Length: 338
Ligand SMILES: C=CC1=C(C)c2cc3[nH]c(cc4nc(cc5[nH]c(cc1n2)c(C)c5CCC(=O)O)C(CCC(=O)O)=C4C)c(C)c3C=C
Ligand SMILES: [Fe+2]
Ligand SMILES: [Fe+2]
Image (cartoon, rainbow, N blue to C red; front, top):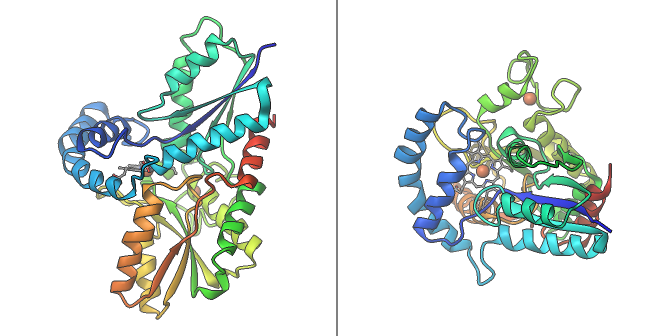
């Protein structure tokens, strides 16, 4: 009997922390028109001429810091998630893992499914909140590839899972292990996005970043907005932990370039909290389902050092979903729901 195909896709990571591999990764990533969303000639000059030559050596150093004998944490945990999901689903399903950039590739994963004549394909981009630069890019890439197939099987896409109960509960349980009451403030720090991307995703062109407090909560107009979905995820994790509104903040990290990104910026929130005399911060990063450079290094090392230099004492990262059994159950439900 033919199997149902499940394609898990995460962002991708360099093949090694060497400068040439990081350069190759950044080139592919930042040349994606959904990431640096400007016209091709301008993008090529900016990415290949200005960003990558300077960023690659710096990023390579950071990747070396987080690289272990298991490799990059993002790839290691993505492989674990794929293996555990396959175990849960059994042999009526064919689970494949791909990365949007670098390896393993989406092309190869889809080719394997095509060869084994899967009866359907479900694409699950491993980003809880929808952004054109992440989920949108994965979906476009998959559609580009299958659009060239003679036979296109039934194919479906999970748009987002920002409010998935298992995902929320796993983050909350990981947070509980750190005893949240012992912290002065809780941060929900999401990966940043240029403000321009939010405006472009608002098909009414009248709401996101135009109306006061536009993205602080989710409604019918902003239901696909990355910022609104991020606020909603934070609200649900906070509710699960019984954390009151004054005790937590939502913020956005990993800014690149000079254009304005979604605010508030994590580094500015950390500086403000240090000024207010806060000493201990607990940080959730619920835009990521696996530990990665942006959590393990940026939060645990960079923000920790910044906070200490401003008089704070400790910044504690809450581990990502990784291979937590409850998260694997949630993945199983996401993979099999209609
Ligand atoms: C959570 C989803 C992500 C969105 C949305 C996203 C947008 C986005 N990212 C950049 C630039 C960089 N991101 C980098 C690393 C990185 N980004 C995500 C996820 C999202 N990015 C992850 C999971 C990672 C970590 C990968 C890993 O190997 O661990 C990097 C590379 C690292 C560095 O040099 O800092 C860059 C660059 C842009 C410009 C963007 C939206 C426009
Ligand atoms: Fe990113
Ligand atoms: Fe919005």
